[in-house]
Image (tube, rainbow, N blue to C red; front, side, top):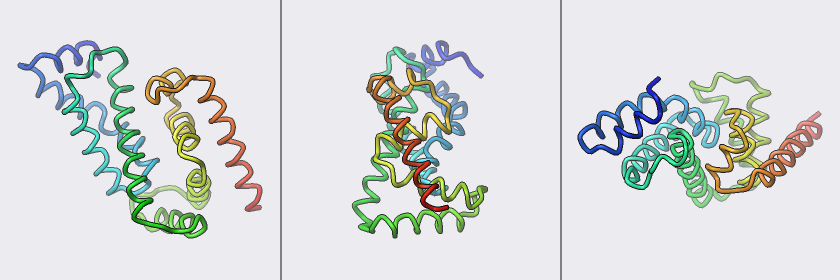
Length: 181
């Protein structure tokens, strides 16, 4: 794994920028893919959002000054791209909540790249019922084990608000499963 500071320096240098960007893509693609995949659920959609994330990163290289970790910056772009994708999908698909949940479970179980079981599909249904902020915090904390400080930098929200959102999300998911029993 290349050192973050070295990669940032190479990204800032026009002579090494393209090679450094290729290195960054190789280094962070898998981690960002799974972060995105937990938001959008579909393999193909995750690949599209990942590609858009790297396009935005390339376009925004001049605005990155190394104030945060490179992965934190890329995560912020990936999260925003994922949420934008979901908003566009929501505008396209005007389903009721019950239909949306049924669609998520069926979509996941039919996806050849989904290796989870029925419980994982139900967890994804529960996550889908959460408001956007709670869903985002839950996904980043639960699956990516991101520190609240990193999530705070990525989302531009206070750690206290994030902790509260996570706590409420966990309660709602727990309640979702209790109602299913």
